[in-house]
Image 1 (cartoon, rainbow, N blue to C red):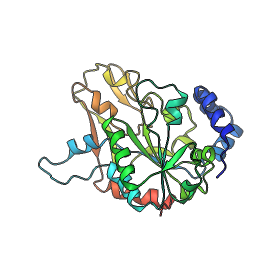
Image 2: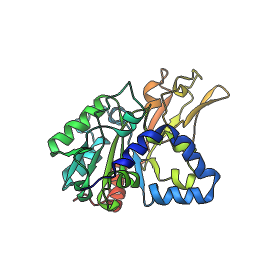
Image 3: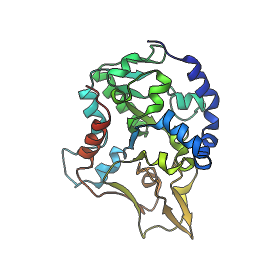
Length: 272
């Protein structure tokens, strides 16, 4: 279970340069192909909206509401092996002061057995549920999918047997680089199918949603005194949370979005 610790140190030292590296993918075709091959090949990653927002969209009085974190619980139940990372490499590299650095990602599947004990520890299903709840209670946004970056720095391959579940904070998330990546790469990191964000006519142009630290992929901005959502919105719902006029809505266009997300992820990664 060897691990290239030099690569971990290299990631931490260069984390601040991630935006510049991402912009290279739009400027240089050979660099785009190299970065895609090394870090994003075969990736398919979904951001999940917050449970609270989906509950708010549900019919009042319902006693058994399915929520997006149930997607993660499905894979926890299926997983043959689970590892909880000891620390979040993104928050540690960015010296995060707002969210706990010791709340790391979860890795599932047979390839997670190769993760060094210096970086993560095996976890029971109960520990995984508790870890998921802790992140949700802190208001973090969950990300789930196949992520080649993790197979590389963790030395945990093959990629189709390693499932990543991240607990993303708005200040340090790696995918703040999404707007800077070439679209051929950025399209691999997206919102759950059947979920979208709409700005309604209630918008008064206060700009709260467009403040720094709200949308960590810079997908919402002010245009002519009104909030406008960009195509690369991942529908996490942070803008919905902060809008004081309830002018931004999480819209579920497909009630089976959870089943479809599970199906798509399962085609990419076998965690059993």
